[in-house]
Image (tube, rainbow, N blue to C red):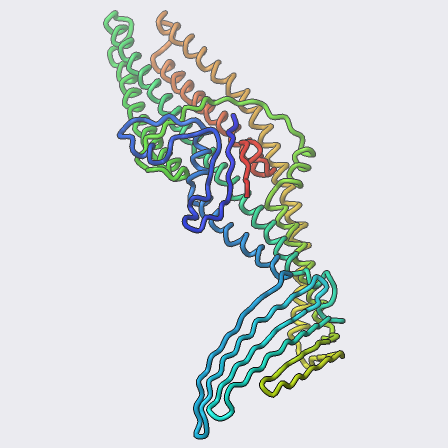
Length: 481
């Protein structure tokens, strides 16, 4: 069964918690679940996943972090946009000779081009009034252009911060995808743990009911003179043993409910009940096919690849920093003063060279970047090998689990038949009470084994999806970020 859920990140200034919007299927709200007084809440697995994706605190925190992460990318993209500023100043000055009031306004603009060219333009208006000279006005514009020729020149170096920000955004999206997949995995696991606890309580209660019926059968056989009176003690001891087992099963059920409620972020007092049927279907998949999917979809492995690209860009920037700072500079300015009505202008063009001497920090950054690239290559190789190991183990565990499930089903059927035959033999006086109780214990063990094998196989499918990075696709969850 799959569930269709989608999430969108909305930049809502008033309330970031409203960033989570879900689509079909609709489930009851947390408040509705918490308000139920003692009424058992039947929960399908798809509904449990939907509640977890909507209200799980880890996912809500991850989506809130995405608000700042996406703004970081916006800031990086804004580096090539015109940057504007406005500076204003008003001063009152008094000396032994005169008094002066001065007002100044300076708007400015700067622009960085993709090739590293820096263009600056500013205009200044100055108004001064003194007691002796009267009013004076001065305004002027200044244009400056700087084009790096060695260090900082070229499209690759200039765009390095933006490319790093874009790669960081890829990492953030992969991390969000991995976080959501982990929450889904935990939800499915906790849900099936609740199913396991419910089924084990049912098995224990069925065994207790059979033990009590067997006591009545023993008493009937004793009354008919076909069984010694002391043999009923074995059946009564079995009843006491099953009562004890039932109490343990009830406690495990309570603990499983608490664990699932915490994952769903609902009131811990909510009486949840898992109603999903345990259906195991074979999932044929070769290791080669699984590995191909994992290399394309596994978030942790893809994050290692992105980290390698980041290290390569950092090395490129560190190598560029080893050059001298040589730039072509040019500009023009013009100013005018009143009431003197003087006009002055200037134009210039030339080169500017800065040679650092004895600065080891640039060499240090290069060494660190080269080492980081080599370490990242080793990490990627290790990550790929670990991915191969995880995929191979997950596929083989799934195949082994399917075979074990078939054996467990057959063992359970044989245990039931064996107990029926032994009960018939006891009724005919050809068996003992001890043998029947022993076969009863075998049946309980077979039921528990079949239950555990079924859930273990289903959990192996969940683990395989987690390893392959296909958890979201398996449960039809879309992240609209």
